Length: 141
Image (cartoon, rainbow, N blue to C red):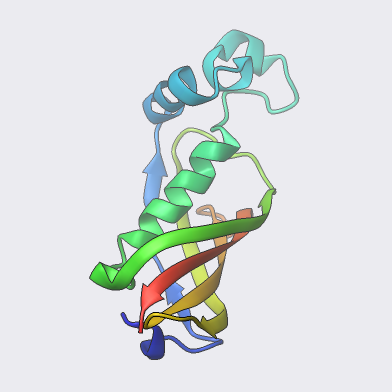
């Protein structure tokens, strides 16, 4: 979508994606090698009673399923900011996540571009919010 096709208050809902134990441990081994993501025995003794996904993985998955809606399409130029990130609840193996995306701000820029700011809210299968954050991208007008 081009800049002028977005409007403040517009809402999108993504498909759902299941977070597997294998994806949690694989992601953590490469990007967040902490015990609560990798060591099942030690994680069971901690506050979460088992392995949980890295917050960074939850954020990345939220962004992935948003991008996969195709809303930006080939009109996106680049991401410019991520703000107000909150990891609200742990994500466990076999949790099913979806993201609700609301357009919160639009700003015309020079050179036939504009910035689109959206608020991502990611929920598990129990409709509990697990992540939220603001994302701004530059798109063609």
